[in-house]
Image (cartoon, rainbow, N blue to C red):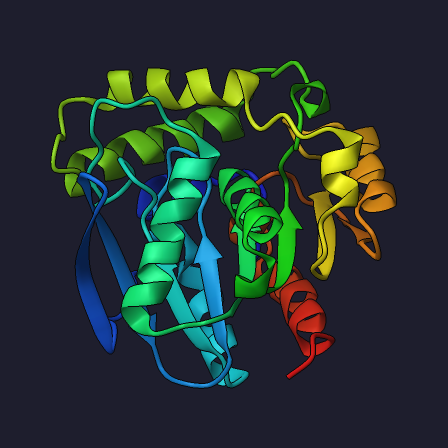
Length: 266
């Protein structure tokens, strides 16, 4: 399946998630975090992008389960079914939510697959708590503000944004607050994360830096810099796709994920 222009995603979204073996909300630090766990095996936590929700991983869940992994999903605070409070967003705060989900599920360590903001959350978590991260598949994000491009309008971006608006209204506990939600997330993205080269060089977990060939938001030079600066990191460019590769060409994206996971210590 290919959906390079996101026309299918715009109308239908990603494939709906099945009911999890474990599913519900966790009260943590003033908010409620929705999470779900599927199957058993080595745990893989999928962290979605900004303005999205866990349902955007609908094309990845089946393949990861078929490969023998336990898949854990969580809606970031204020996203999807999770709530938020009045504090500004930060990647550190959202990483603490992920740790709370891991603690609730009894996961001492997990592999992380992060997409956009989810990639930042995963790498911040791995930087601050390396003992909890077996590895990070870091797809399509920056680790300092210089890594982003000037956004150019496109039909695909409009379609994605419209889908996010629709899903927010359907899932959120505050369905009429999409604009304030976008403003708060955008404020975070404008200045965070802001890791120095020394910060990156101190990361001590396996990392793969992955970027779509036509990513709309992240400079390829920045991805190459991250791969050079994080010890042992590898750079992978996914051909023919953009920031939305998990939706555009799921088979291509999933192969890259499984290749990375397969190289981690069991």
